[in-house]
Length: 203
Image (tube, rainbow, N blue to C red; front, side, top):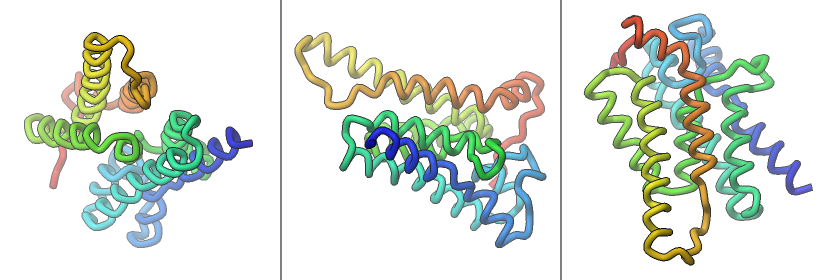
C-alpha cells in the first residue's frame, strides 16, 4: 500500500504544470506556443514576465521538494521511488497529454530534500556555467553531471578510507538516472548548440 501511495502522491505533485497554469491565468498566454514550447521557468521568462518566471521556478522546485521530504519522514525505504516519480511527473504530466517540462527546477527541489550541499553545488555550477556561456540548457546538463560526479567521487573516497562505512542514503544511481533524463529532455537543445542556434539567456 505504501508503495502505491508514494507513487501516486509523488507523481501528482510533480505533474502540476505551474508554468502553464500561471501564464494562462495571469498572462493570458499558452507558454507552449512560444519559445521552446516548454512549460518551465526559462520559457516562461520568454513571455517577458519575470514575476511569473520566478514564481514558476519556485513552485516547480517545491513540487519536487514536498513529496520527497514527506517520503523521508514517513516512507524512508521509498525515498528514491518518490524522487523518480516526482521527476517523471514533471516530464510527463497527465494533465498536458504527458508533454511536460525538462525537469531542472523539479530536480533542484528533489536535491534540496536530499542534500543541501548538493543543492548549493548545483546552483553554484549552474550560475557559473550560465555566466560564462549564457545557455540555460548547457548549464543544466553540466550542473546535473557535476552533482553526480561529486557524489560518486565522495562515496568512493569514503569507502576507500573505510570499507565498512555505512552511507545513510546511496543516491548515486538516482542521480545518474536524473542526469540521463535531463540530457534526454535537452536533446533538441544539444542539436541547437551544435548548430549554434540555441537561444541565450536574456535577463
